[in-house]
Image 1 (tube, rainbow, N blue to C red):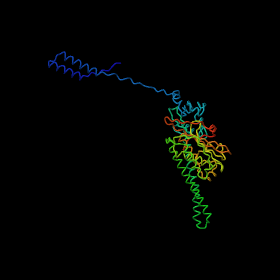
Image 2: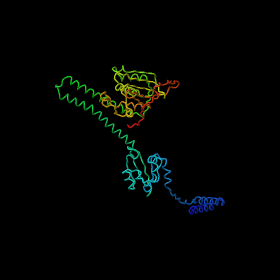
Image 3: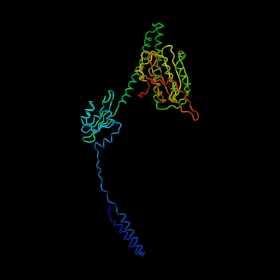
Image 4: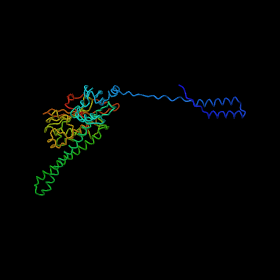
Length: 421
């Protein structure tokens, strides 16, 4: 590669003047000549520079094939349209809309007024469509033009976000209804007592006061459960670290829930003494809620069996079994929903808030455990909570006995529903 030379005339002139001065000062001519040659040579070398490189023009080749390779493995459904006909659909889009969409008019493929309006105007933008794949689906369609003919369509599933928003809305509505009911009763009876003065006889007054007290206690329980649920949800990502002897905790919580009036119905079997890492207050609440439910909804004067042992998967297991009416299979998946009741009238009459199993579910999830429920109509319901054992201390192995045969019974329902709180 050649170089372009720019002669440094000023520098050469300075070198010549210096050379002449050295000769006038009687310096050896050989030394003066050598200095001149070295000076001029250095100036000439420094003045040389490489030529400017020729500009490189890179022509971008962005065609249908390259776009197809680029988007094929994206988990988001993506389409490339050419004059509104679907030219490319990645794997996610083909799985969602079908293989047949290639070559179709995009407006025909979507068949949604909002999508047709967006695509028909051939402009960038977005649209929200419902029922694109399933009836309750909600999708956001984004269109971005690449050039005059090509455009990219992105499909974003917003169903989960809508479900969460709807769950929050339902929760607020249900909570408001549950709070309003006892408050209305309390206010009504108080107004009656205030307006009647001494005209009401003592038994009627006592009946009204009893109703006020009962509704006030129900209101107190509801607020307490709402606060408990809020605390559990706030801590659901924090794994508890307190080491707990589950046997002592279970025995104390069982008889706290039963109280002196119902403890004779309890059949407690502590067949193991597992140690778990957990939140003591929350685990006690799990046991109390399950035992209280079993005593409330089991048949009157029938026993409630509570058993603590090891499951065959190496986890600690607490099971609570009643001899009640049982629960229909179609209702089992909904039991841990907030305010869900299989028999609303009976639940309210017994003081239930509809939050007990929802609290149990969130506590078990926080402890990385499992919640299982099975029920036979006319026979009763069995609720099983499994909790992972604490890691054994060094040199102290934990012996896990063989589980009881009943653990092998397949549970009708296991709570694995997503958290929409």
